[in-house]
Length: 334
Ligand SMILES: *[C@@H]1O[C@H](CO)[C@@H](O)[C@H](O)[C@H]1NC(C)=O
Ligand SMILES: *[C@@H]1O[C@H](CO)[C@@H](O)[C@H](O)[C@H]1NC(C)=O
Ligand SMILES: *[C@@H]1O[C@H](CO)[C@@H](O)[C@H](O)[C@H]1NC(C)=O
Ligand SMILES: *[C@@H]1O[C@H](CO)[C@@H](O)[C@H](O)[C@H]1NC(C)=O
Ligand SMILES: *[C@@H]1O[C@H](CO)[C@@H](O)[C@H](O)[C@H]1NC(C)=O
Ligand SMILES: *[C@@H]1O[C@H](CO)[C@@H](O)[C@H](O)[C@H]1NC(C)=O
Ligand SMILES: *[C@@H]1O[C@H](CO)[C@@H](O)[C@H](O)[C@H]1NC(C)=O
Ligand SMILES: *[C@@H]1O[C@H](CO)[C@@H](O)[C@H](O)[C@H]1NC(C)=O
Ligand SMILES: *[C@@H]1O[C@H](CO)[C@@H](O)[C@H](O)[C@H]1NC(C)=O
Image (tube, rainbow, N blue to C red; front, side, top):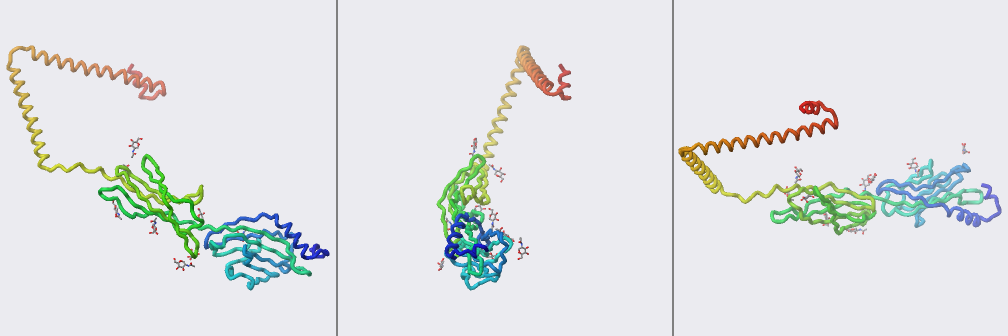
């Protein structure tokens, strides 16, 4: 490095470098709890420096060292116990991999590369990255606390979701019927594990279920404004219609008997009336009956006449739209 030959003091060089490098934007990276996260360095070794000439290390926001590679040799004695055995350095892309990520690992990290020249260590590269840690909440699960009873349609449910991070925004329920979807807010009960720092959340819900409709209840965990987790539906089928008050058998029998009695009496009365009328002289009565019958048949004829134009109307419509076989047949009738 030519700059090392200059007469400037090391201190000045450091100040210049720090100034040049402070403009570098810090990179964001994400890791899942208990998985591996990447802490990038993005060093482009444009001068093709050999590892023998370099000192590479990462430190966290509290200046605790995660990893150090001193002239090609890993130096564990500077590494904080918290990070011991949890890192591996990927030389292909100058990335430090942090294993078994915990919630407390979230924060900012810095990678430093120093050149080990004849005059000592010269910082040549530096980068910051921000690590955020996530844990997926389990799918919300609805469990029954108390059932509907005979004289109340109220049902009590509990919905819970566990081991997630960060803290979700809210948890609510959707009650869906064939017609409607109603949202019910609830007070989210949350607890945080004091070791893993993961959250578990739950709500308890109480609904009056309309007995005559099928109902599906969903529990929704709102993680972010646009990110939600749905439970499986908890289905409550419509109750069969309440049977009508039970009528004792003997009453049914008596009623049937009465009806038959009335019908039989009526028939007997009608028949005797007819017989008596037939015995009476004079044809005028018979004529009337015939005339009534004639009028009736006339009416049925009219009805038939009325029906035919209707059908041909339909047929015409068919012909206009498309000349189907049936349409043509009807048309020839005309
Ligand atoms: C972390 O992951 C391992 C398997 O990869 C599993 O055995 C362990 O239970 C997990 N720990 C937690 C706290 O989830
Ligand atoms: C970088 O140096 C290595 C040897 O240290 C050499 O093999 C390689 O060709 C060099 N690459 C460039 C781009 O100079
Ligand atoms: C670096 O390379 C490894 C595989 O060699 C890959 O898993 C990792 O995602 C890479 N990281 C970056 C930041 O490109
Ligand atoms: C977490 O959930 C997302 C989808 O929301 C999925 O892509 C990712 O693989 C899950 N991660 C783990 C560790 O389960
Ligand atoms: C709740 O009621 C349903 C029928 O209405 C029954 O199948 C179920 O076993 C009951 N569950 C409990 C916990 O009482
Ligand atoms: C559904 O809607 C129809 C008409 O909009 C209404 O007649 C019916 O009572 C509704 N059913 C329920 C269960 O709300
Ligand atoms: C975590 O909580 C448990 C009780 O739930 C308690 O016994 C334990 O001491 C706590 N641990 C820490 C580190 O606070
Ligand atoms: C729901 O049930 C879980 C597990 O049984 C319990 O820990 C939680 O306190 C309950 N939530 C509410 C709001 O009652
Ligand atoms: C309720 O759902 C069942 C199937 O789960 C269906 O057979 C029944 O017709 C539905 N009843 C109503 C009132 O929609």
